[in-house]
Image (cartoon, rainbow, N blue to C red):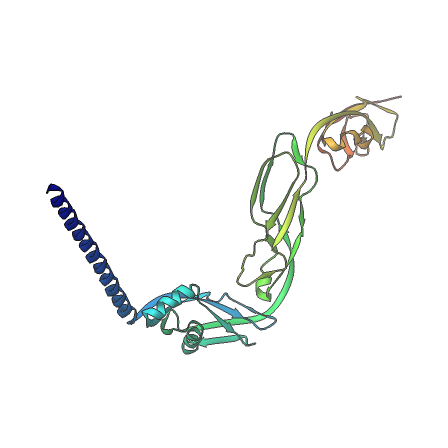
Length: 320
């Protein structure tokens, strides 16, 4: 008997649970249908929304803007929710292109702007952030200028430049209006920093256009090469050469010491004969009343640096 009561109770519980689950499903379906109807009604109404519309200009051959034109317009659109939603989803970056005729002064009025935007975007325009577009055009000219390196370079101790820095190309042709080109004498690379250099560096850099809306560059990239070398000190003792003497003269000392800094790759190429130090007696008018003459470094290799010599002057004796 108890088993029969248990089975009956279990059956009633299952039917109750099934009934509750079905009612919830029906409720959710009804809510979904209601939401769809509500959404359909809402999106069928007319709304207004503002979006930025990009502007692009096609210039006649050989013409250039004197001043940068606006690159976009804040535009207020009007349309059904469906139209605005589909336009937003499929045209996230609306753009309008204007073909400009070959005229120095040009103006596009509000009605033409609206018509052009509506033609491109396919939605009614009700307002614009400006009422007209005005352009001043000029003939395009060109000019070749040097590229300047904008860099902060430092070396590790005992390292320095092996040779001058090279840029390739070292100049660029810029295209723009003649009045604008007159103000430009050079153009810079992007800035970069090199610290504690111990080896050659080769790097591609961007050439910075100072007015990208108004100027065009023949090259927007340049390769910089920084030759680096380790340097060391080298010392020589060389004889002092006497010139413009009028008597038999002996100088003390007769040699000078030279110290210089030279790159390791040319260390063995440097000799005493590469340097000449002179004692010039041309301006010593009264030899018997003076006893010193200054020394001058006359010749040295251009690729050595920090050249110093000692002494700076020598005493002389007149030999009778």
